[in-house]
Image (tube, rainbow, N blue to C red; front, top):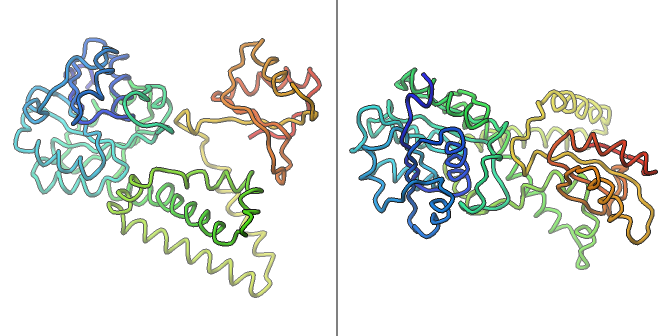
Length: 370
């Protein structure tokens, strides 16, 4: 079943970055859809009305439950569960509810206990952005992003098909997964890495001297693998509360791996280090490079430039003259990875590729692509 045959009226309970971006994408692909918005502070959604993304705002989302074909729960996980409880007695007919949280087990179990499993279909758009709130909403962050759909045994086939079609319509990549395995997978590829990054940064902080020498030279690889340590603390507290057991399971595996590395070092079996990096490199190099958000879908090149005034402006000017879009540009102070003195970041791979002959023909040496 096509999404536009199944869903004509949408209700968004909470409309921050993710909810707002989905609403914008639906408006773009389905101009005649009716979109109703709810937020505890209605003033936050005035822009959504002005943008004509939202047709109207409501004071009580529960009273709108019977009018909507598809309800998106877009608040934090704990709030989504409370809102689901409020909606449960008023859901009937063909109304479908979905959420956008990164943990699925708790809310799927909640839907089961409320007796509305057939009306609930979990969703997790794997995307994001540095800024939050509707004012930062952008349908482009959904493009080429994985959107995981977690169906239950009571999910209707036609609902899953229509929702999958909707996900394709907003230009995301739908993946259907078991809720429990979803939580196990995201614990491994997202939740535990965030905890590791935060712990590693704090370890360096404790090991640093009073002058902050480590902080000064930290760049390159260290900053790449710890970027996610700057994530929203409140959000990560909520995620760890919701997915504790899966996180602990993966964390235990990781700690066993660290113990094995420590044992290798203790015994001086350094050839095992070679094997460690060979095995991890082979697996990582096989990962699809689908970085689904503008924040993560970034391509970099590094070049050598002379230490002269105006060089950065010159490089930027060369690319601007050919209408090559630059996301970021800056000096690399730590060059342990043989990076060039200047890095240039692009949103699009083809912009990076176009820039290479423009720069080399102007006498700049490309050191590395990322």
